[in-house]
Image (cartoon, rainbow, N blue to C red; front, side, top):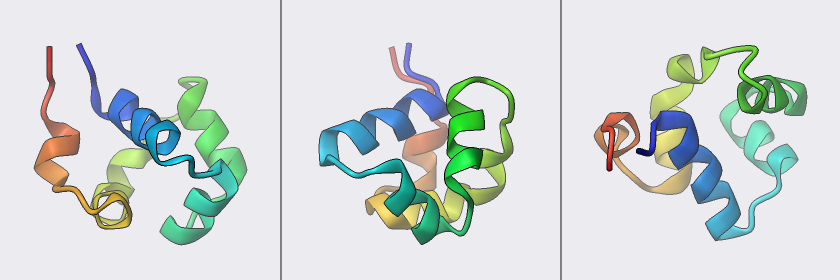
Length: 67
């Protein structure tokens, strides 16, 4: 089952986007992205609208759990 973070990381991989580029575009540091990946922070929820805009997907898509 894909959760929100799994979807974000999957989109990064699918689109070949570097974490640094992604971080700069949504207004966080690369270190913040690393914290998300390592489960040290879930602050990505505060940025869900910016993340959705960056990937050109809906916030609902990112927040829905898929099987």
